[in-house]
Image 1 (cartoon, rainbow, N blue to C red):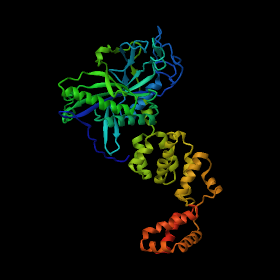
Image 2: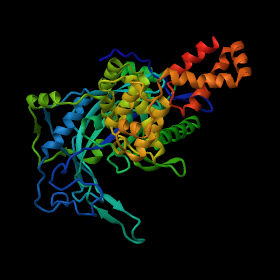
Image 3: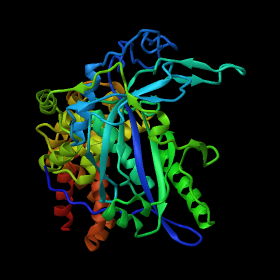
Image 4: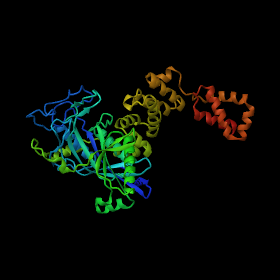
Length: 504
């Protein structure tokens, strides 16, 4: 891997009426494990099914039903931990978290408070300005999701859909290392990218498969550094948690809004109460949901129906040996092997499908030319076409590679290639065959180009004199030759002949 060195981003500073304030942010990301069955039952996890159709007796908390752990969910969590360079705990245990859930029939959630399966890890979060921050992950634990309460079907009643109940979540808890709204969004995006590469979570925020609780506090400049030196949280302000955020844009907005609320209270002489809040994007404000409970409020105790979870190091090593190439490694390889810029490599590795597409196009070809066509032409065209994803591209890697081959062999010019690309995008077909059938081949016969140029020179003596006085005007003759040949003349040959004829 390349030795890429980054500068730390500056913390977000918000000016109050009396002081400048810095932000301190920690995140608890809930990622739904990509699995066919739930954590403790064989019920399906398929999204969009009829309400209450993916529910087993265990999920419905029927008397006498006991949970049985899904080994694949454990494997997916371990795989995620390894992808975040985290410690894997060979011994972990499940606890019951007790309080009333209207959409969790057991009345408690099975989670891992005291002994999580994954320990400390890290995520390198890159920002667009060349800076990056290494965000520490404190832990990842498994827990079951709750169901969904539906309030808009009847004016007098609420309904409960238990399809999500018992679905396996990975809760990824960060240290308070994030220092601004943009960093928070970039952290979520990087986590999402890593899990998509690993195949452990699809990252679909719209469906609720990835959501975050955001802890926000404020401090005066210099206090965060004291916290880092001592580990003493008293140097930081009281944090408030913004619950269930499932939009990058809203996460950034909510952090900014909540920070300003806290600054206003503190500068007015008030105190921040630790609590859980909700963000209302329509009103642009956070509102109190409940006071923040401590662990003892949930009456955590070891789940009596589940033995401690013991896994073997050999099993973990086998999972580690089969990990795919991760985003940072792939980006570094693209820069080294294909000569790409940091920016282009970042764009092409943002999604695993895009990276696979590019690599198929670039195989045996110029990496820079392939990157240019994938990023500028294909991505641009897909965005224009109702923001289609790379998996919906009507142009296959083989077709795009064929277009690039035609450019490299001087069979077609760059301008003709763009016309050809549009034909392939809208109609399909073999690019080489289209070029032959439609007479799109580039004119490389210097005799034919010279004849066209001689005619233009003879018909425009005044323009010739101007071009001889000012060589920059020679481009006019190039344009006229391209026009006369229907854009098929080899631009390089045209430029050389114009320079020869006009002595420029």
